[in-house]
Image 1 (spheres, rainbow, N blue to C red):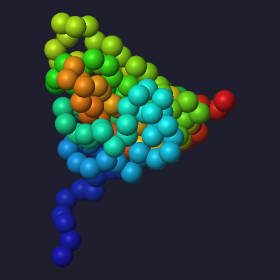
Image 2 (image 1 turned 45 degrees about the horizontal axis):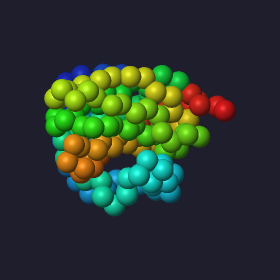
Image 3 (image 1 turned 45 degrees about the vertical axis):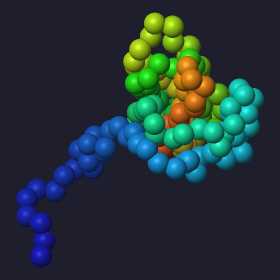
Length: 148
């Protein structure tokens, strides 16, 4: 038995998969040596990060060019500082945000450069000292944006 009706073009399917966000779960496979070292440099023990608890990282599943990949960060609980990492880049730490004391919910977007396909990670330290994290897998189809 087959499915009747017109076939969806590839672009329509890719457009439908435009954004991916990782929900609650165990530590991602992305916590490799590069990310662990970058976290430790910032005083964060990789094993203390609780993944998917109040922090969302949205990014495209597929980026045709790694030179300007849009990402969006959403944090429901007040966070003291948020770090964004691209572990496969020459420098793993991409950006850090320090919301003001009166900030409640954080929502920000930016474009980042990616050297190649990788799992991008965001980590936030809350006011109570706990650390939460989120990840998004991004496939770069053309040459990456970081060539140096």
